Image (cartoon, rainbow, N blue to C red; front, side, top):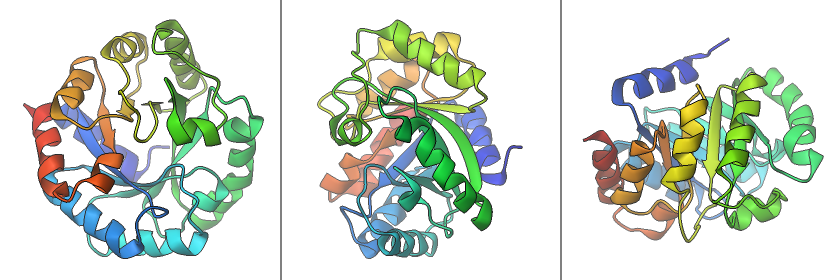
Length: 248
């Protein structure tokens, strides 16, 4: 069953074609700083806040960050967990995801088996998503033990995405890794969106409006930026530039 947050995302995609998510990591920023980033990102036009990633933050740090963010923004706060420790009962929803090209069963089914009872207990809205790490993968690829997926292997990306869709997942996230030297190429995005009928999220290495626009033109339904907001002091302005690029 589609929940409130997922319906909000689908409605936004229907309205705007491509939307923007801001990813914050409580391992790199305090709860207070995460809230500041989220507030500026909301003013810049981001549609939702994702929190987590390859974070090594404690449960207490995560909970604190989620609560502070929710006290400061009106848009949804969605968990992007790297395992059971990335689940907080205070969030609006979470991406219940499987790292499809991991070489370790823990990341495509075991972590989900451990997390599912926690999600059920807290009555969190779970949004099923297939997660695919391509290119260098950076820290996310290292931690998730992702099997290397070259940017040239579009057919493999398509295969993983169709597997996600066929298994009943309702989103796919093509990820180059936080701080990646280059984003997912438009050719790979286009190949996936040509065949997959579910929304495709693209992130990693997107720092400039032209890169976001290229992903949009290739068919991406959502763009994620994370390292950008950690490195830039003018978060609101930079987010606004990217949102404007994918909205024009």
